[in-house]
Amino acid sequence: MQTSKGDTEVVISPSLSSRHYPSGLNSHFISNSVTFSEYVQHCRQLIAQVRADKGLSGLDKIIDGNAPFELRPTEGYVAGKDKTYRRGILLTHGLSDSPYFMRHLAAFFQENGFLVMVVLLPGHGTQPGDLLDENWQEWASTVDYGVNQLSVEVDEVYLGGFSAGGALSLYQSMRDQRVRGLFLFAPALSVSPKAALANLHKLYSWFAPSAKWLNVHLDNDIYKYESFPKNAAAQMYALTSVIKKQLAKNELTIPIFVAVSQDDATVNTSATIELMRNAPNISNKLVYYYSDPEKTPTGFEKDKIEYVYSVLSDKRIGSSAHTAIVVPDEDEYYGEHGEYKNCLHYYPHDMEKYQACLNQVEKVIQGEITKKNLKQGTLRRLMYNPHFSSLKIAMKTFIDKLPST
Image (tube, rainbow, N blue to C red):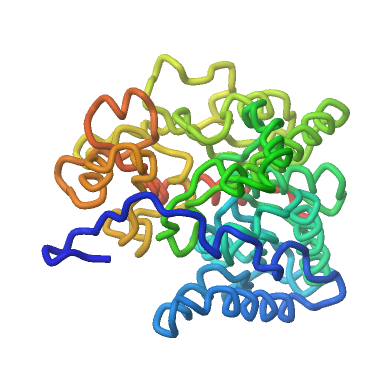
């Protein structure tokens, strides 16, 4: 909503509404028997049905951004020996996110000869309440389905994922020999142990529904849930616990490309660093965004790590952020001049700073929600990567070194 001056109008703390309850339509993976095009169409219809209250003018945009999709390689792609295409990649979004966050990566891989499929995880893309009854096995089933569909058309299967999507991609790779390599962006390989207790609310939330939620927000973001249920945290803890056990038993030998932020406030970056230290493939590459030179990881061979200083004083950027890595600055929704502004860390306890974060331009600092950044002034969580062009160069170099079939 807009005030007469064009500023975003602040609405004080919302109560639970229909969007905070399951729709009953989006808790389970559809079926392994459908084609990918049928799966895409099913998801589009599902999103349209649940989010019809947005009106026809905004609904098409919502459906396009939240629905799974497929991109065929551009002209000049390398044909496969046994299949139509040589390479394909399945991209998986993060927790509470949507396929919108994968669109720029998808375009990059398409341009580099990959058949690209992007899935929508159950519970996502419709309304936050659909995550209340979700479990991580449904997400894993969706990724497995995507690999099955991709493998029909490509000789070499690769997986790429952001945050929870990175964890799911890693999980799939350790149980599926078809996977030839990984592209992980701020993967959620370790979460707070407190998440293990997140579903204790079930003892009493039957009479206090609000107890099911870590936070309840306005959900103004059309491509990502802002309200977050405790069950989502519990499912991520369960998934990462299984992954840790798998890593303890199996050496990860396939090529891995990783991009992480030193300042990530959502996932434990040190867990990813440890993964890369122990992964032996000579092609592995780590892109590391940092704001404190004294805390950068050491011990990596020079060609295995690329350090990117994420502080940009001229743009008032204090650091990178978990939310920033896979989105370029020109993105129309989350980019430098995009319409969405992430100020949730002020809501609803400091509405004055929340409003300043939304509406001020010159005085706002962008970056991760760290103590250091918060002390510098009004902070807006960074939603785009000003170094996305160099990230693409690093990925292209990695791809060029991949072994051929």
